[in-house]
Length: 438
Image 1 (tube, rainbow, N blue to C red):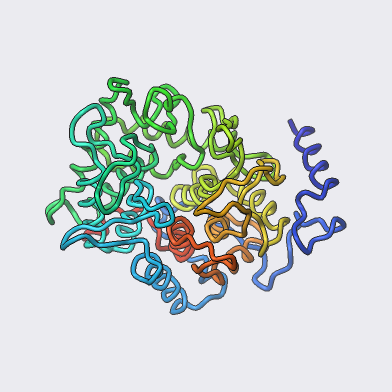
Image 2 (image 1 turned 90 degrees about the vertical axis):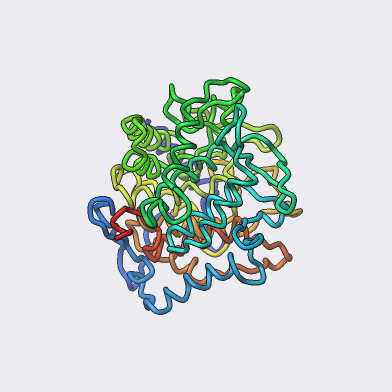
């Protein structure tokens, strides 16, 4: 195996594929750089043991007052500003919209709820949950308690009755956190809502073509909980940290299974991430082997942007796979740095070459230096072991949620990933424990 990896590295260097704009083929861009802050040293223990969360921005030399302002502005831009993706409905509801695609998705609603519980915005959380429950959650039938993944925001009409498994994963975690933070006697019984989803999940046996969101045999999240989608997965859905949370707070009798899922997710990510670039494809089998999807092929695209953020969160919260995660972070950031810290593209084949077909978004079909990937690659600095990692932190600090030069603007996916990154790097994305309700 070592010979194969060395040969792959040699091919990369000789072909010049890992060299970005402004880096010549005579430079080894995988070597570390010199930075006045020195080599980044990652924390050795997870927050679950220490109760402490790293403020990477502060370590990078930014002032706390500026960090607070940065987070407040990121939240404002996504939820309140002229380019916002959050919209209130009446006196008690609200939704997050993928405005470029004119729909509301379980991804966006569940991300919004996570932002709300992390930043202690109870009214926002409750509005989002009420809207989700009313317009997305199935009430009865084979899909009872699951969610329609795409909804027409103004009418509530379901664009699809089916579920995307990551939505359910986030909703359960959101609700468990809300239960810990605010208790269950303030109008919504968050724990009961989380248990309803979990209990329903365990009752799905394929009747009506609806399955568990976790493939029970493989102990891995499936792409969609149907008979057809039950046998494969999406690497960006693998959040071992969330399973650890379920094991602690679900109290539904499946705690050991969730701990096993966390360990399995970590091992899966070892297999799914390319040994040189660290890239994953958007879709894989449970072995980690890529799964081509029609014209989309088997490439690193929008879904995959989330993988480094998910791995870094697991490192920050639980620190159970430190050595591999640090090595992964180094490989992943080295690859992007070699493409150019200010120029790296947003879609790749996993070997680092550029794909022949570009997945379009919002009516545009082009490679770009996307804020979403700038953001998640910066979160990988939580695992950083080299001075180069500071440059990724600086890059997201200097980034702005605004239209690109060609007019393309994505305040939804770019915006939410950017907000998540600022939360992570300022130490504001945490395990919400019952102690926070005291």
